[in-house]
Image 1 (spheres, helix red, strand yellow):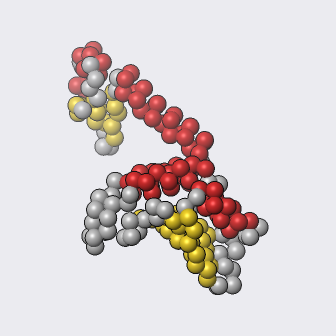
Image 2: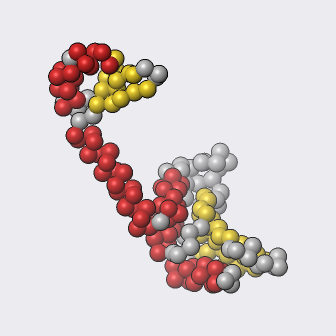
Image 3: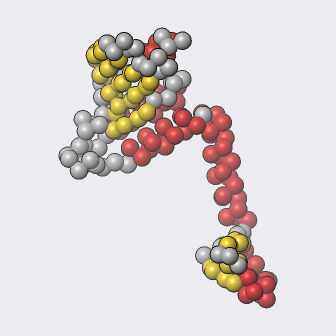
Length: 175
């Protein structure tokens, strides 16, 4: 990136345009600490394509799903000892299973990595009930609190359809 004063650009506009055409970005300083940028067609295309793709993805998947997929990508980058207390990296198989689940599940959860090398998914419904699932490689620890405060603990085999059914039932109770 090249920084320039507006007078320099005005006096040598053809030269500046040549630099922009060769891939440079020119930042032009204006009064009041504001800036104008000269960018080439390639840079413009990259910026607008990215914005269009993000808008399209948001339209297709919804904001919550996009947020969760980004969150999952962040969690995927965690390395061993990510919590400074010896937690291991979340296994790729768990990340893959949860990513697939997020793409097909109607109600999006909050997602958290756990120190047990797992992912925790959490939902709240309109009746004040709570549903939590700890996704392990082969099983799911389920914890629920109903509207009266009763707790239920169970463990099920990881099966995408079974998980989706639990979540659907959880929200159906709130209707």
